[in-house]
Image (cartoon, rainbow, N blue to C red):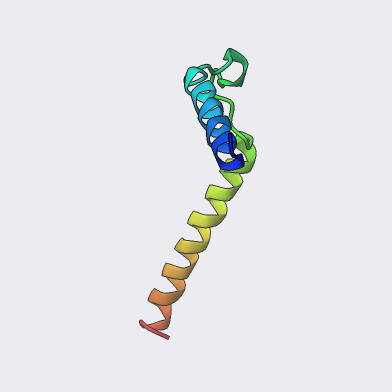
Length: 68
């Protein structure tokens, strides 16, 4: 066999081996439950800052008389 033929056979074997592994996901990698990456305090603080700054901007724009 030539080198390219050997490489082709090796690639086909590797491909066929991967086909048999499809869908075989171990149970430990699947997340169970609702585990958030941030805590509720940090999330609440973030929402407070975002909504508070937007309200502050709206009030400031309204009191200054429009686009300024």
